[in-house]
Length: 407
Image 1 (tube, rainbow, N blue to C red):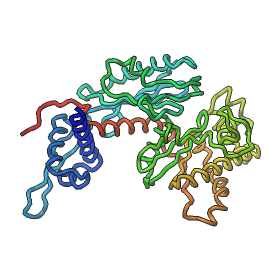
Image 2 (cartoon, rainbow, N blue to C red; image 1 turned 30 degrees about the horizontal axis):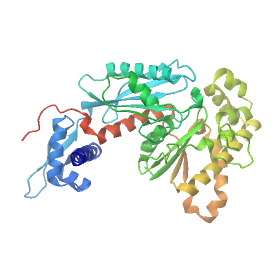
Image 3 (spheres, rainbow, N blue to C red; image 1 turned 90 degrees about the vertical axis):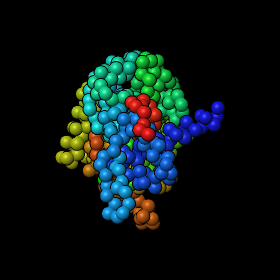
């Protein structure tokens, strides 16, 4: 029984290896796949026949070798054969998208979720409704192979994918959100995943980066400060699913007490509430929301308002201190600032650079690049689409066979 199970698992893994290579490097020949994956040519041929039967790959012409050898038949993925559904939860809305296996969005929508604070089942109801709405908009001939949900707050790196806490939603205890969603979507047979929204945004920003550094840390300010870590193209969540959460990294040992139980947390100096209050826009923040208050701060910075400049200077020093700690521990190549930190980047950057000056004199090669985010408000949604796409490519067996492979 165990051997049979292991054999099935190996076959599924090999299917994923072949499909991922075709997706990333196609059109390509079987010999190229064998070299890149380490599989034998016979195994690649078997996997290609299986993927063809599932409608996921097709032969796309031939490539002449220029010698006496037989021409190589090229393989291409068929992205439209399968679809994924991605959901991003914000404080007021659900953003939902349907994408194909190439990550191309074929449908998207935004709607209020009307979730009741502190009542996770009401959020699960809204997510289930959004998924059903997306299913009706998906191409009729595409197989739904993954549903992925991006949620604010750390998500446990375990089978349950438990949301450990989501204070912005009044969730102060662990919530098994995936189980709640699955119970409402019993008709959905594909896997359902829940991931942290900042981790999703980190993945999207990594793939949007023109240089693709090996290690990236993302720090974004929205309702608080979140972030993520991507190493070698993969989200790094740590032992408990909370790696890359910089908002509650202490940057001052004698700083103000934080609700998390620590003192001097980064969010207390560089979080939007802290910065906008220090700059004198707390009333605007409460009355008109973050977007309006952040815009007014930029206007004040542009005209050289001393109070605004001082608030951003404090934030820049705190962010610089956090980055110094992060780079000492992880030795990463790049730090990307997102959310309103990207909006305030022209004023933050010189302060952060000044924080680096002492260490730069000793080890200049260890200094990371600090850049503004590229994707804006779309980062989390694009990231959860990419997460779902990768998961689907890694397990093509979720797509049923359409016909038997040719002999």
